[in-house]
Image (cartoon, rainbow, N blue to C red; front, side, top):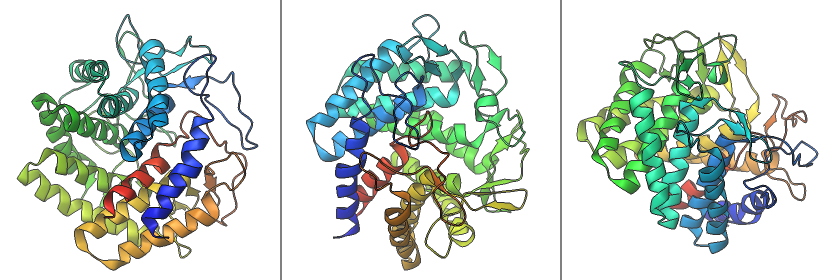
Length: 389
């Protein structure tokens, strides 16, 4: 079987059935937690990021495969987002709700709003439901009127949109005013929103985010994206996130393909090639897998599920740009590693969260939780299917 055929089969026979099985028909949405032993905690809170990613996944899987049962799942996720996660008083979507749909965490985070836009734009493309597109534009207007300053996007807000500290997207003892991660996911959200809606106001903001990446986030000297920043976009951490860099390398290119602004395309695609090559040089292991990150010069050699998935797309993307066979070889080696080690071969399972540097599965990590989702590995399958002719 070819790589394209293998990932399609994996999508249809492993990833899709697993996430269909997490549908909550009693209280709506999808269950928010499955432990390592494949036990679902039905009363665990439901995160909006996870629900958005599930909505994104089923919408795009339907668009790619045409299976109407996938659209039914997307309908289920959309209904829940519209009726439970949307704050009908102050606008925006909540961070999380209880298993039965009451507000658990009312934080309004820019990252969370972006994922909702990404999902809603994809659902509109799949369903042609205009209310989803209207919902996405409503969130877009909120971000643009409340969450932007002269440097970029602010991060965290109270329920009624007063700025607050950004604990949710900070780590390693730092408290970041701005993050690469949030800007990356606004970029992908606006790319999808502009692609399906063609509104010039979205295009203008998308172009500005591409400039922010080039001028404020990309470190030309170190050939990497900086991760955590103060309010004026000065970096505050020596962190090299291999997974985010390889993910960003193809998401930035894709945004350029959608925007079609000649100068932006030229300057962006030059440094994203360098970015992908630096990850290839610094993060690949001899067994074909990807390391996680490097913090203050100390490498985390954990094999994280989403990093392996994004690296497959990122290296295939740079292969399409350069026709350099080493990147294609890296994609195939990554896929072999994933099949043998990251895919959970137990009945009713999906992918493990992580393996340690010795390649042993980390059994303390759950199979599903608010950040563990079908978006990275599902998107990898869909992107590889789309890119291989």
